[in-house]
Length: 139
Image (cartoon, rainbow, N blue to C red):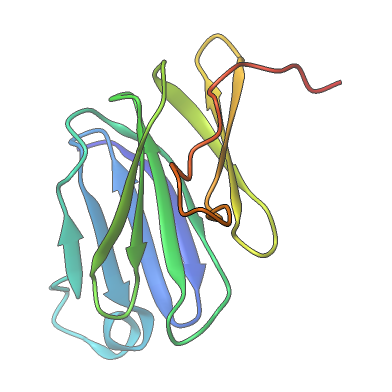
């Protein structure tokens, strides 16, 4: 099992792997457990292809975890509860993920380096929250 990404944020150790899974452990329990076995707090298996990048927001204790995968999706979870919040579809497999400071815009970078932008804020009419997915170039 190849581990692609590891993050430590707010007392959690978070990993994504090529077996399509994301695991979240409570860092304190991993550190204090001397028997060598560590069961994750949460395991997510929503992605159907390898996980390629992770982002964990601030907002403790209800921080959000963003992930991208070669399955053309970004997924968003609440870390503490493990609740799946949202699935975003992109037109291409994604290799990297960028999220703005207030977690209202997600940028997905494809394997061909196209960058796709999705806004997570609703407009006043409550219409589709996704902007048109057109690649743009960052200089």
